[in-house]
Image (cartoon, rainbow, N blue to C red; front, side):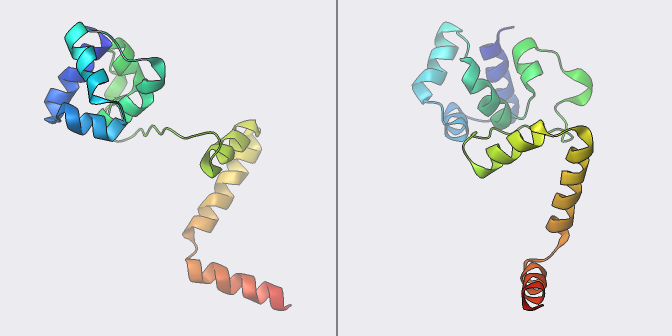
Length: 129
């Protein structure tokens, strides 16, 4: 089975139309129709948006192999532009050694657990000292 055949099989399972798929991925409907008509495959830069839209892993889409429940909700795949804050954060994280990565995650968890008003109050208290 080809990549495009797996895409259309998955669309059928999800009862998702080609139009809905196009809207979720940002891929032109004519391109999607071309895949179906000529049984051609999408280019590599379209793989992650496709996987995100139809809830599969790149491994499954490319090979048809579904490793140990890879389509369950235990894995998330994101497409992030490098020049965004999130892209920069990921790049910095990837430069760190494991100990600093763990530390960075700890900071993120601590900040995420604070309510926004607590952060502002805490900041104001420190500024007054």
